[in-house]
Length: 155
Image 1 (spheres, rainbow, N blue to C red):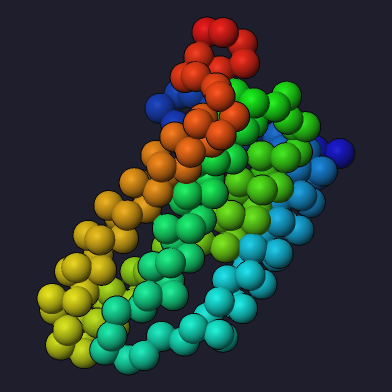
Image 2: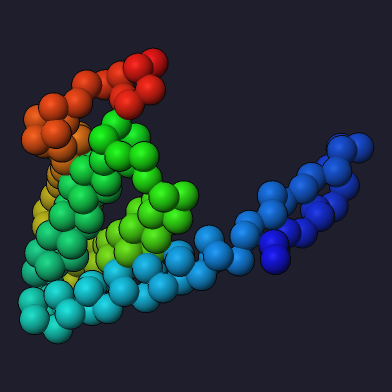
């Protein structure tokens, strides 16, 4: 069973949404639920205080980005991964675990509380740290597994 929808007309061409297998949707949903539960657990054990930098959200986003860096190397350079692994772990678990929507809301809350320096530091610091975490995850995975940028296909 697949899901897909034909789009409307746009400048004389018909746009189409690609079909998505129900199995892929299922693994993304299950993974997303697991990731969201993990994120919720972090928030319960490390709550955000009003007017302060939300370190738990920062940590979740940086850890999630580090994990996606590792995952991408594992499934492109180390393993011949099952076709559902990336949707389950990458889109589902890590997509549900990381929380850039909460990040944006928390920036707004910091600004509203008058914590301008903290808000701007959190805004820029999260982006820099998240991108650095992806790169560090990739480098770490390559070091641990002895792979190169060429990947498992040699190209």
